[in-house]
Image 1: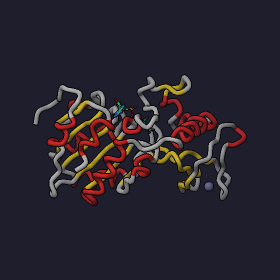
Image 2: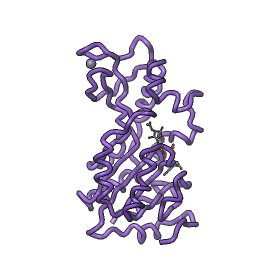
Image 3: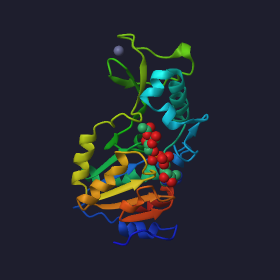
Length: 249
Ligand code: OAD
Ligand code: ZN
């Protein structure tokens, strides 16, 4: 298979490339780019800034320890944006592909929004947590939570033990959720399709290297090359809504 591809419109090419036989198992990894056309800002698109802060300054255990109000303000704003967002043709295409492939399909997302679920995805794992869940810093049990906490007076505490409640999000420096399950699924995959992630945050950015070691075909879809582009067999330049619908059998 040739490396790197030129033209921007590649929806015919993608169909040939992504021809999945009944023996194939598809592992899909998505990042912020798949929700971009639903109106949710990517992390690095805005220069990685939020209100003048770098994402790394608000999405870390250190930020939480220093200023939980700032952290909750950030995630409350993201909740507000995500609540009104709708899945786009990219999310919908992946849900349709899953419908065709059943257990031969697995979706691992770095996103904390629920647009994949809203589009109908079922075999999905949120490796970086869920924006609409919170958890007590002591009891650690995640629960559904769509509330906004934007002032010091409204910061949530646990009903049971009174400890601070935090977003159920994997921050920089924390270990993504259920990596073992991810590795097990990847081990069995024959095709790895990565969509809309800059390839800058590990371990997610390292999945393509594991796939390479085991001989799994690797394809990237997004409007620009990711940082780890050299690791992919194929790069298809285009947006999620332009290219993913062409994959639906
Ligand atoms: P980034 O913001 O780093 O990258 C978004 C990627 O999406 C870029 O490579 C864009 O080219 C691409 N993109 C933009 N528009 C697109 C479109 N319409 N269709 C397809 N792709 C598009 O986001 P992530 O790589 O997801 O972690 O970031 C990884 C992690 O870093 C996030 O999960 C988050 C962040 O900090 C945590 O919160 C722990
Ligand atoms: Zn508690």
